[in-house]
Image (cartoon, each protein chain N blue to C red):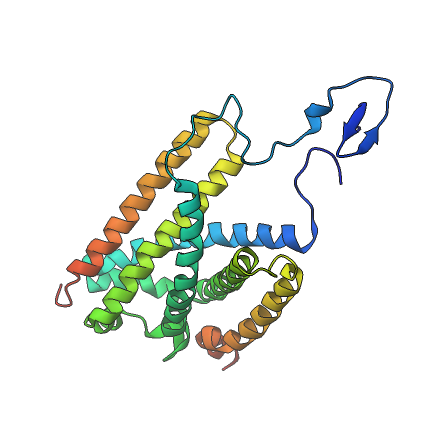
Length: 158
Length: 125
């Protein structure tokens, strides 16, 4: 695409005989508040979300890689997994706690990542809104279901 | 750089793209994985028959792919943390990416037989 303009952007002279508003090519710094920006937030939600991604990420490296080693590599890999194998592991509160923490951190980490992706690519306000409604619904459902399954697991179910 | 774009190419942009793609893939798998595990509350038979699909060779190959996605996301995530919190992180972000790629290749080579052992035994005896 040919861009024809006059003016100066970041010291780069753009010369052409047809004048165009140079601000048309400026990208606003991310924190710039414009008329379309909502009123100033009173919470630090975005900073806390940013921090959560890093803290949960470090913990998940250990939880998830440990999970993969146990489930996919040790003792014959994936072939050993069965109801009995799950029952054996969830007999221990340690592995119940491991899986519960992994479930919550991974789902919240993933949901926040998906929120970022939606914000980046869904340009219409209503599209963004409904995608986020779907995301929150799926996330709450999955976290609650997983939690319920871990806490109510019955090794003697028939 | 063309006007009107934030995309700058090279290692920084492509690692960001790979981080995003692997993240989305992992999230969708996680959703499915919680659902399949929830079958332990239905019956041992329901759980075992669903888990049987995880042991077929096409899904076994996908497990290796999932491991590849998770391992890259994990290692590159540690790099992102280093870029954000280590004073010299931004300066060495490119070297750190190639370190990530190297460690990823080595670990994926090491995981090749352990993860695919059943499929490899079936195919090659």
